[in-house]
Amino acid sequence: MTATAVALSYQLLASSSSTATSTTDVLRIEHRGGLGKVPSTVWPAYGQAAFVQTGQSQVQAGPNQHAAPIASVAKVMTAYLVLRDHPLRLGQDGPTITLTDADVADTDRRLRQQESIVPIAAGEQLTERQALQALLLPSANNIAAVLARWDAGSADRFVARMNATARSLGMTHTRYTDPSGYDDASVSTAADQVRIVDRAMSLSVFASIVATPSATLPVAGTVHNTNALLGHDGFVGVKTGSDEAAGGCFAFRSIRWIDGKRATITGVVLGQPGHNQIEAGLAAADAMVDRIAGHSRRPVRTMPDLPKRILAPGTAPRSHRSGSLSVVHDLSGVEHLRHASRATRASPEQRPP
Image (cartoon, rainbow, N blue to C red; front, side, top):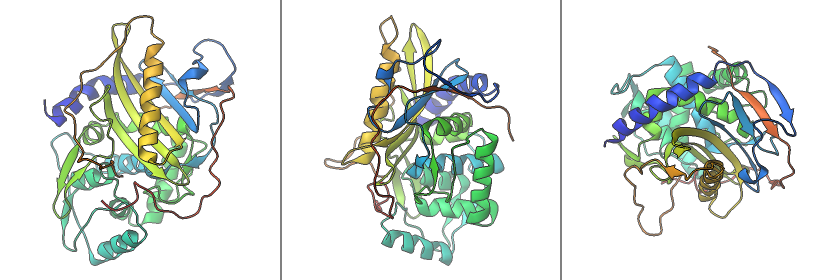
């Protein structure tokens, strides 16, 4: 089965979940118990996490929800805005973006800072789809800047749109300061990010791109998805993020069979500690989904694996308002790893391929 076909088949299920859970009023309520309470054992031991499941109208939010750096998970909002302003259908490439000398100079600057970029050349032409692939698969900060200027005329105007959209979705603890998430001042909570991830995954083109293991760009050549869980344990996307201030972050969607029914779990983990921060975020999400599914009384089986991407030995993956989800907070006392430094930094995901 092709990646596009897989993404479309999953999207038919996922979009019904998004539609069902995006029609309720915003309710920021905090429960210490009651119906729908998630066992405290579901949540990662560090950082913060949240998820929403098929048929639920509430985002289940774990302890320690607070505004924190989100690194490249911010690119979910960037891609969502570009596709909202310039809609694509499956199979469409969209308009062409011609890269300039200024774009090359900006890329060189980011390369010196050891940011995550894709190589480009002046005069290179990227379709909208290719630019989104560069943004979402290898997590190219330079293409985030290109898309922001292309969409809004300037990065500042684009960031203003990011924040306006966050407010419209009820993301009250979110503040974006750049389109890539490289700036540590771009902060949010796991619960807030579940809102935009769920909304973005309702767009078939977004869902198809994040379900793709790799893509080919005119100058950069083949680029790979930083999401090494893709195709394993029912994971069908969405976006990794990592740096010293944010720790390991991962916005994800996994489709499982629970009690004989297909269940879509859309979630976010932030602030995961570890030497390899991307792996830490992936591992925390994988374990969390297993624990969510494991509370079923019947045997749990995952969706069939997608074709697996094999990394070379020793290689780590690099790196309008129509309603809102409500949030239930779990206030159980799980220890939070606090990051002492928020200085400018380099990280595995920000380093060039």
